[in-house]
Picture 1: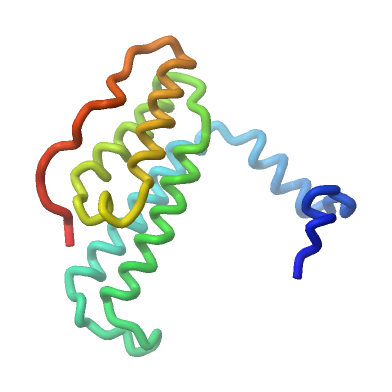
Picture 2: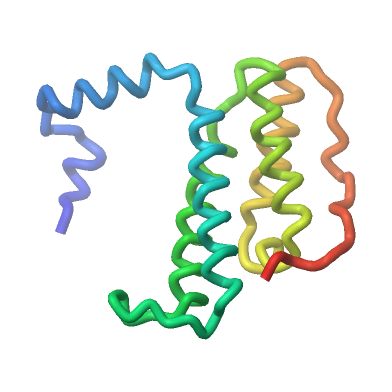
Length: 147
């Protein structure tokens, strides 16, 4: 079990490998685009797998629907991470808006998680921080999901 003291107190200094990861994270300026690409790939995989819900992936012992849900869970975590990053420019907000619009069109995903709520709040905060107008109460388009 991880010690809560270590988490709160930070007694273990980072090693060189950890510092390299932190330096890369600090220097990246394409994180929003990269996260969007990762999200898009995982959702594409999910939809492909869900298209044959009874399809069995014998090597994994699960159906296509189950593995597709796993891909959706990863996509959801990526979207939540993207929502949590403050946009530093209007161009960066575009990645969040594209993701928000994709989730608005996916009724099943809207029922399954609060990711869309998080994205709307994040976009509104980004727009306010950047001094732009945004209608946070806009209704998502009607329609069904993709699976």
